[in-house]
Amino acid sequence: MSLLNDEMNAVNQLIGKRMASENAPRIPEVTKHLVDAGGKRLRPLLTLAAAKICGYDGPYHIHLAATVEFIHTATLLHDDVVDESAQRRGRPTANLLWDNQSSVLVGDYLFSRSFQLMVETGNLRVLDILANASATIAEGEVLQLTAAQNLKTSEDTYFKVIRGKTAALFSAATQVGGVIANAPENHIEALFDYGDALGISFQIVDDLLDYSGVAASLGKNIGDDFRERKLTLPVIKAVANATPDEKQFWERVIEKGKQSDGDLETALSLLDKYNCLEDTKEQAIAYASQAKSALTNIPDSELKDILLELADFVVSRAV
Amino acid sequence: MSLLNDEMNAVNQLIGKRMASENAPRIPEVTKHLVDAGGKRLRPLLTLAAAKICGYDGPYHIHLAATVEFIHTATLLHDDVVDESAQRRGRPTANLLWDNQSSVLVGDYLFSRSFQLMVETGNLRVLDILANASATIAEGEVLQLTAAQNLKTSEDTYFKVIRGKTAALFSAATQVGGVIANAPENHIEALFDYGDALGISFQIVDDLLDYSGVAASLGKNIGDDFRERKLTLPVIKAVANATPDEKQFWERVIEKGKQSDGDLETALSLLDKYNCLEDTKEQAIAYASQAKSALTNIPDSELKDILLELADFVVSRAV
Image (cartoon, rainbow over all chains, first blue to last red):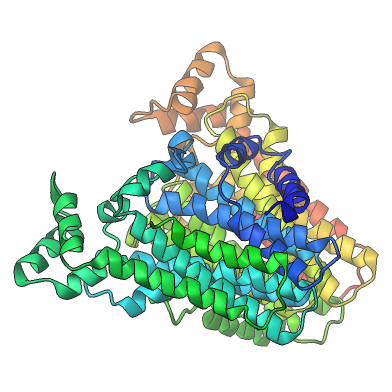
């Protein structure tokens, strides 16, 4: 990915500059904590690659890449408040180090900053796409909130949630790359479809990792979703197969939230019994393939290879 | 204000339509609660009046009026989480009726919806103004958070906070009215100055009411700011005049947060001793005058009278 090194550096510089605030010193404190924690910069990479694949040679893909990372960071801050999370990327969360208030308000600030950045591009279609994506993300998060603790949550609802909370930003990130480059409509559509399928695959893998042994290596706590009583794909599959006794177990731990020592282990054994993690992984792989296929009509290039490799990388985390 | 009745109805219809969400039923539940609670619709009124004063005859002042109300509503939802408020407009807050999570996420949703609405106007200058205002609001809120509990907070810092958290949206509301109407620059500036001074006056009065007897009639609890240990103008004035004993009182109740029965009464008597409420009111009146003076170069009209009367109305709440 060294092809995009210079541009990613420019994105990081812009992020650093715009994350600051002269008027409220708490803001750079919190944002520095987030920037220092790193993160994969996956979404800005998507925008940069998409724009360059479509031959863009202007300056605004940098702004758009920073925009999508700001939207992402804002949602992370708010998610950690909503989930009452204590750890993110192997470090204490901002809500733990400061307070929920700071996380809510600094999230709002970054969200506003993201809009400032996108407005600077002067491209109304890009603004439309990103404003819609932001609304879709929030809808997905709210739907997730209300689906949590509800054992009746179907795979359909699950996919609605992750298409909103995760895939909407992936697909917007790739789509605006094409739009800013004035690419032909079928290329813009291909980039959208790629981002959409990649985002779904990414989130399935994320949800899978929450029940698998490699989570610790990613700075995640295994079982977070279980403790937060979220209905993710592995659990939805286990519930669908549950015997009456098992159903009672899920009702107790997910619906009633009465969890005690050993429950996570029981949950894991039920996921194993019905092959839920393997099946979930198969679905993630299928979406990654779909992401790659979406790019068929885009001419081959080293940059296109980056996107194809990204799809493999996303599912490789699950192995 | 019957001059703007039809247009305000159109704004209310648009707000009702865009506050909904097909995908996440929790969203309309929460937003309906907010809409039903009413609210003064002061900010949309500013946008409508400003646009019409400048001779606007297109459809987009409705969108912009709905936009500023959405931004306002989103910040209310987040404020109530930050302040852990239980009451708003005489009704229980959304964070109490549902939970903090819903308030954070539905706030994000409304914020995104506001951006969708403003993007529909296709006016980049308007987008720039409103994106900047959003960032300034968040900065003001964060500054308020860090200034709370700090007795060293100066009147300067107080004005920085309220110019951010309140006046920025008032001035953007009037300014975009002028911009969408393609008004001459000096009229746009006048409208900005009017909104800025009006917003400051409005917030001073709000902070005054928190220590005055008429608060209950507005659905507010008296002493909320005291309990939240916010340094508002009346208290800043009392602290500036405090004897060593009084200083110790303020340190205990505001900095250390050790409040007990009778402390609010003591605070009120200290505000009275140094004439703080009267002095605060004088400043609110001065800003309201400044708001009216800002409009001097705008030709007289019935609509201009609405803005002039609004300035009087804002301070009349304090009497």
